[in-house]
Amino acid sequence: MLVKWQRQRRQRLFRDQQAREAASAKAEAKARFNTTREAVLQQLGFSSYKAYLASALWRELKQRLVSGADCAICRSRKAVTLHHTRYDLAALSGKSTEDIHPVCRACHRKLHVKRGAFVDGSTGRKALARAQRKEANRERKRTHKWERLEQIARSALEASKVRSA
Image (cartoon, rainbow, N blue to C red; front, side, top):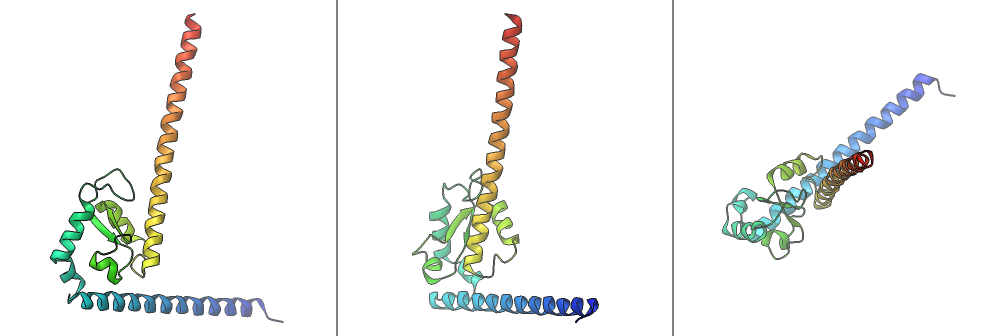
């Protein structure tokens, strides 16, 4: 039978091992992601992601998707930039636009601050979906608040009519 401190030590060691494995998996995923993105950029003829962002291909793609579009997350501001949720050949070349979303600067910053938004495409899509859900909840609360205020105002108006009659 183990003593309490021995159980606690085993639990600590197990947690530490899990944390090391998770960090290692995250580092491997990030390395895979960077290697994949860089390989795709090499296929397209760009030396780096920075060179891609300075290219006519990117400018044309950005102009096509951003012009007149609202932010894909908050829907309240005009989109000024694009957020990639995947860096495959179709997305970077502009042939497929389902993984490129027009967003405002504030929402784009929030997406990249989210933990793991750069690791791989699926996490990027999850961060985008999470941000959209959050904004929808905020909007629902705002709408509910105004509906409640209107209801209070209507009931106060009805009460004043009843008193005056």
